[in-house]
Image (cartoon, one colour):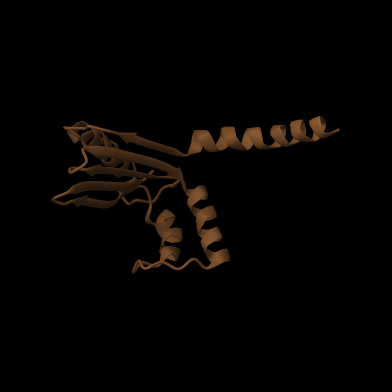
Length: 134
């Protein structure tokens, strides 16, 4: 009987794992000396989005984050579906998580209203960051 229950639990969890693995991506590249090609590719994609949606009225399903740390020569790319962000926000609301960050995390819920395209671009001394909605 226990084997059947374990098998049923595995069958219930496996589709969720497959679904999540296709929707959320974190990629870390070490020893990146020239991150320019990654940022040029991202900027081309963002420019295409701005051409397709010049008034930024369009569907948003994904948030993309590209970060380069010059001191560590590390490039991090994160792709997350907006529904996962919403679920995370529901979790934060449920447990009333407090941080020392001066940012209202509930504002993240309105990102979809901004529309597809560039959200944040920072090119600092130690890092470069691109965040866009697709």
